[in-house]
Image (cartoon, rainbow, N blue to C red; front, side, top):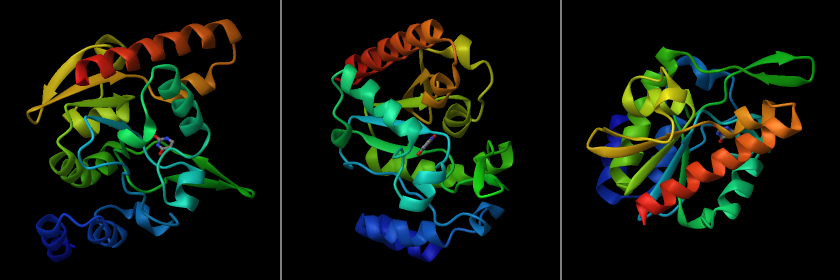
Length: 204
Ligand code: URA
């Protein structure tokens, strides 16, 4: 992997990075996943969004945020005037973690070891894109980015410096998807939109 990575760094080539990522064996998650899902977006993006890990759809398609959480994120981006194709989207963990349940694959949150092993790839993306601001979507992203994902709600809406880069903290779109009460969901969606708007203004 490190030889391929050297080549990826030297050439800046997306394909080489994707090849190197595909052969990653830093943690066991590669064994059951269909494929590793790299980040996507322009390398000169001012905003980078970091989610948790690919879901079922992302695992099959090989692209981040194309399933239900991605659709919610798309709506939030649109509502706040952020153009998806202009931002870099990635995840703290690059392989889908799940347990089979009949024909379905049920999402499992990555553990601390998996997040910490995958930080190597996230750091590489941070170094290549060098965005003006990184948005941490939820606690897994926050751990991947800062080494500590505790106290998400207390840290929400604020900017923290980590690795010399500013990190803006907010919730994961899946948190909104899980809310069953319509009023609460509306309230939380508005708060999420306000966070994204604040992040876009900081990055502008
Ligand atoms: N949830 C994430 O955190 N990332 C994705 O890519 C999809 C769903």
